[in-house]
Length: 195
Image (cartoon, rainbow, N blue to C red; front, top):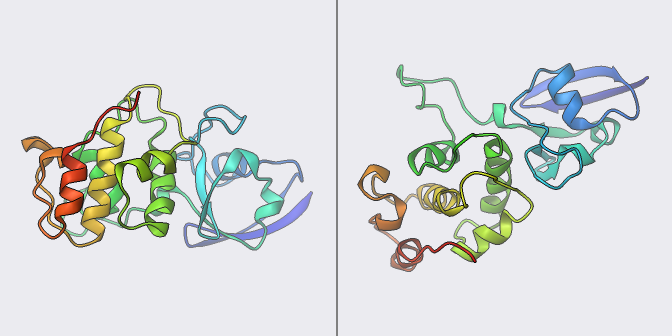
């Protein structure tokens, strides 16, 4: 057994682990962070994506001992407690955007998609549709076709930049009035399914 210490979603963790234990299994089985999904165990799907010292990683490719001393962020660490009785009031803008733009169906890939999107938006707060698609290349969704996922990320990006975005029930981000950035409004209106 090897002793590891790390911070996960703001909480200090100190555990003895087998040196071969993958980070995804430490998060799920030891800490109970089951929002980090195991989709393939081969690093192909991205469902297990978390942040390790601020960078997105597929936690099925990281040994827990490699995360010793690190800061780990999971999907469970994004939302804050609701402030006004509305369960969504504490959600991160990406979580709200995925909900508003219907960026999920079964939801299995969603935690990894959101964590990868956070990394993308941290590096590029004004991504194009192509930037989003490229940024999510390592994440597979077997249900949606990605159009609403891309719209969700673009919506969150606009909201994080402080722009006003239209209501998804009235046509979603694709027909949104993005008040302060006409260039991005045109990108959002012209979203197409990749071949």
